[in-house]
Length: 199
Image 1 (spheres, one colour):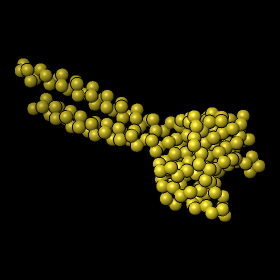
Image 2: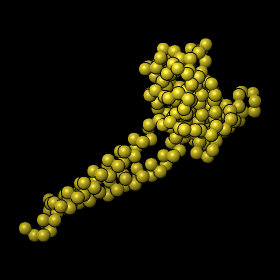
Image 3: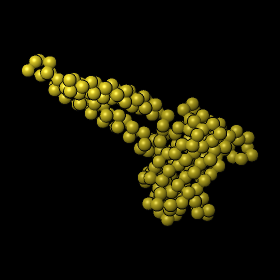
Image 4: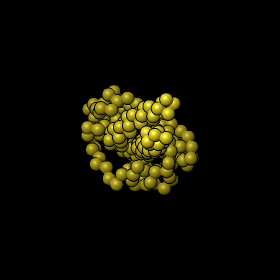
Protein backbone atom coordinates (compact mmCIF):
# COMPACT_ATOMS: atom_id res chain seq x y z
CA UNK A 1 0.00 0.00 0.00
CA UNK A 2 1.39 3.42 -0.96
CA UNK A 3 2.10 6.13 1.69
CA UNK A 4 -0.57 8.29 0.08
CA UNK A 5 -3.23 5.61 0.59
CA UNK A 6 -2.08 5.15 4.19
CA UNK A 7 -2.38 8.86 5.02
CA UNK A 8 -5.86 9.26 3.56
CA UNK A 9 -7.75 7.65 6.49
CA UNK A 10 -5.78 9.79 8.96
CA UNK A 11 -6.60 12.95 7.00
CA UNK A 12 -10.25 11.96 6.84
CA UNK A 13 -10.36 11.31 10.59
CA UNK A 14 -8.79 14.67 11.42
CA UNK A 15 -11.17 16.47 9.10
CA UNK A 16 -14.23 14.81 10.65
CA UNK A 17 -13.04 15.83 14.15
CA UNK A 18 -12.49 19.42 12.98
CA UNK A 19 -15.93 19.67 11.36
CA UNK A 20 -17.58 18.23 14.48
CA UNK A 21 -15.79 20.76 16.70
CA UNK A 22 -16.84 23.66 14.48
CA UNK A 23 -20.45 22.46 14.44
CA UNK A 24 -20.64 22.19 18.24
CA UNK A 25 -19.05 25.64 18.60
CA UNK A 26 -21.57 27.21 16.23
CA UNK A 27 -24.49 25.58 18.03
CA UNK A 28 -23.20 26.80 21.40
CA UNK A 29 -22.77 30.37 20.15
CA UNK A 30 -26.31 30.45 18.79
CA UNK A 31 -27.87 29.19 22.01
CA UNK A 32 -26.37 32.03 24.06
CA UNK A 33 -28.54 34.64 22.37
CA UNK A 34 -31.86 33.17 23.49
CA UNK A 35 -31.35 32.96 27.24
CA UNK A 36 -32.64 35.90 29.34
CA UNK A 37 -30.05 37.18 31.76
CA UNK A 38 -30.11 39.21 34.98
CA UNK A 39 -28.53 42.64 34.90
CA UNK A 40 -26.92 43.94 38.08
CA UNK A 41 -27.77 47.51 37.12
CA UNK A 42 -29.36 49.32 34.23
CA UNK A 43 -28.76 52.99 33.52
CA UNK A 44 -32.33 54.19 33.22
CA UNK A 45 -32.76 57.16 30.93
CA UNK A 46 -36.01 58.54 32.24
CA UNK A 47 -37.20 59.91 28.92
CA UNK A 48 -40.50 58.09 28.63
CA UNK A 49 -43.10 60.68 27.70
CA UNK A 50 -46.77 60.12 28.16
CA UNK A 51 -49.29 60.93 25.48
CA UNK A 52 -49.73 64.65 25.01
CA UNK A 53 -46.40 65.58 26.61
CA UNK A 54 -44.28 66.13 23.52
CA UNK A 55 -43.68 62.43 22.92
CA UNK A 56 -41.81 61.90 19.70
CA UNK A 57 -42.56 58.23 18.94
CA UNK A 58 -44.98 55.55 20.02
CA UNK A 59 -44.28 51.85 20.43
CA UNK A 60 -46.61 48.91 20.66
CA UNK A 61 -45.66 46.47 23.39
CA UNK A 62 -47.38 43.10 23.73
CA UNK A 63 -46.64 41.00 26.79
CA UNK A 64 -47.86 37.44 27.10
CA UNK A 65 -48.02 35.92 30.55
CA UNK A 66 -46.94 32.31 30.93
CA UNK A 67 -49.53 29.66 31.68
CA UNK A 68 -47.22 28.66 34.54
CA UNK A 69 -47.68 32.07 36.16
CA UNK A 70 -50.01 32.66 39.13
CA UNK A 71 -53.67 33.19 38.24
CA UNK A 72 -53.24 36.92 38.85
CA UNK A 73 -50.51 39.14 40.17
CA UNK A 74 -50.01 42.21 42.31
CA UNK A 75 -46.35 42.40 41.34
CA UNK A 76 -45.09 45.77 40.17
CA UNK A 77 -43.75 45.50 36.61
CA UNK A 78 -41.55 47.96 34.74
CA UNK A 79 -40.05 47.73 31.27
CA UNK A 80 -37.03 49.27 29.58
CA UNK A 81 -36.01 48.74 25.95
CA UNK A 82 -33.91 50.41 23.33
CA UNK A 83 -31.51 50.22 20.40
CA UNK A 84 -27.75 49.90 19.96
CA UNK A 85 -27.24 53.68 19.77
CA UNK A 86 -28.23 54.75 23.27
CA UNK A 87 -31.91 55.47 22.61
CA UNK A 88 -33.94 54.06 25.47
CA UNK A 89 -37.62 53.91 26.36
CA UNK A 90 -38.54 53.42 29.99
CA UNK A 91 -42.05 52.40 31.02
CA UNK A 92 -42.43 52.30 34.81
CA UNK A 93 -45.29 50.47 36.49
CA UNK A 94 -47.14 49.02 33.54
CA UNK A 95 -48.95 46.69 35.96
CA UNK A 96 -52.55 47.34 36.94
CA UNK A 97 -54.27 44.67 39.04
CA UNK A 98 -57.57 46.53 38.72
CA UNK A 99 -57.54 45.91 34.95
CA UNK A 100 -56.66 42.22 35.43
CA UNK A 101 -53.34 42.75 33.68
CA UNK A 102 -50.83 39.90 33.52
CA UNK A 103 -53.24 37.15 34.44
CA UNK A 104 -52.21 33.59 33.65
CA UNK A 105 -52.15 32.77 29.89
CA UNK A 106 -53.17 36.34 29.02
CA UNK A 107 -51.86 38.86 26.51
CA UNK A 108 -51.67 42.55 27.37
CA UNK A 109 -50.91 45.22 24.78
CA UNK A 110 -49.74 48.74 25.56
CA UNK A 111 -48.85 51.88 23.65
CA UNK A 112 -45.66 53.34 25.11
CA UNK A 113 -44.31 56.76 24.24
CA UNK A 114 -40.69 57.80 24.22
CA UNK A 115 -37.75 58.90 22.10
CA UNK A 116 -37.54 57.53 18.59
CA UNK A 117 -35.21 54.58 18.14
CA UNK A 118 -33.60 52.47 15.49
CA UNK A 119 -34.16 48.72 15.57
CA UNK A 120 -35.01 47.62 19.09
CA UNK A 121 -32.40 45.11 20.23
CA UNK A 122 -32.72 44.89 24.01
CA UNK A 123 -35.52 44.63 26.52
CA UNK A 124 -35.50 44.20 30.29
CA UNK A 125 -38.30 43.64 32.78
CA UNK A 126 -38.20 44.62 36.43
CA UNK A 127 -40.48 42.81 38.87
CA UNK A 128 -41.08 43.77 42.47
CA UNK A 129 -43.46 41.79 44.66
CA UNK A 130 -44.18 38.37 46.11
CA UNK A 131 -46.61 36.79 43.63
CA UNK A 132 -43.91 35.54 41.25
CA UNK A 133 -45.36 36.70 37.92
CA UNK A 134 -43.85 34.78 34.97
CA UNK A 135 -43.77 36.41 31.52
CA UNK A 136 -43.85 34.24 28.42
CA UNK A 137 -42.59 36.78 25.91
CA UNK A 138 -42.42 40.49 25.09
CA UNK A 139 -42.95 41.79 21.54
CA UNK A 140 -42.08 45.39 20.67
CA UNK A 141 -42.34 47.37 17.46
CA UNK A 142 -42.34 51.00 16.43
CA UNK A 143 -42.11 53.27 13.39
CA UNK A 144 -38.40 52.61 12.76
CA UNK A 145 -38.25 49.17 14.32
CA UNK A 146 -39.52 45.87 13.03
CA UNK A 147 -41.31 43.67 15.52
CA UNK A 148 -38.89 41.81 17.77
CA UNK A 149 -39.87 39.20 20.33
CA UNK A 150 -37.91 38.50 23.50
CA UNK A 151 -38.64 35.05 24.91
CA UNK A 152 -38.77 34.51 28.68
CA UNK A 153 -41.05 31.70 29.90
CA UNK A 154 -39.02 31.47 33.11
CA UNK A 155 -39.50 32.87 36.58
CA UNK A 156 -37.72 36.20 36.78
CA UNK A 157 -36.01 37.26 40.00
CA UNK A 158 -37.45 40.07 42.05
CA UNK A 159 -35.88 43.53 42.19
CA UNK A 160 -33.54 42.78 39.29
CA UNK A 161 -33.57 43.88 35.68
CA UNK A 162 -33.95 40.68 33.67
CA UNK A 163 -34.04 40.19 29.94
CA UNK A 164 -32.20 40.12 26.64
CA UNK A 165 -29.59 42.22 24.92
CA UNK A 166 -29.33 41.27 21.26
CA UNK A 167 -27.26 44.41 20.60
CA UNK A 168 -24.26 42.64 22.10
CA UNK A 169 -24.87 39.50 20.02
CA UNK A 170 -23.21 40.93 16.92
CA UNK A 171 -19.90 39.40 17.97
CA UNK A 172 -21.63 36.10 18.63
CA UNK A 173 -23.31 36.22 15.23
CA UNK A 174 -20.00 37.07 13.57
CA UNK A 175 -18.38 34.10 15.26
CA UNK A 176 -21.29 31.94 14.18
CA UNK A 177 -20.98 33.12 10.58
CA UNK A 178 -17.26 32.38 10.66
CA UNK A 179 -17.99 28.94 12.03
CA UNK A 180 -20.47 28.20 9.27
CA UNK A 181 -17.94 29.39 6.68
CA UNK A 182 -15.32 27.06 8.11
CA UNK A 183 -17.88 24.28 8.23
CA UNK A 184 -18.64 24.82 4.57
CA UNK A 185 -14.95 24.66 3.68
CA UNK A 186 -14.51 21.54 5.78
CA UNK A 187 -17.47 19.85 4.11
CA UNK A 188 -16.02 20.64 0.70
CA UNK A 189 -12.67 19.14 1.72
CA UNK A 190 -14.44 16.08 3.08
CA UNK A 191 -16.28 15.62 -0.19
CA UNK A 192 -13.01 15.97 -2.11
CA UNK A 193 -11.21 13.38 0.01
CA UNK A 194 -14.15 11.01 -0.35
CA UNK A 195 -13.80 11.41 -4.10
CA UNK A 196 -10.17 10.36 -3.85
CA UNK A 197 -11.22 7.16 -2.13
CA UNK A 198 -13.70 6.45 -4.90
CA UNK A 199 -10.95 7.14 -7.42
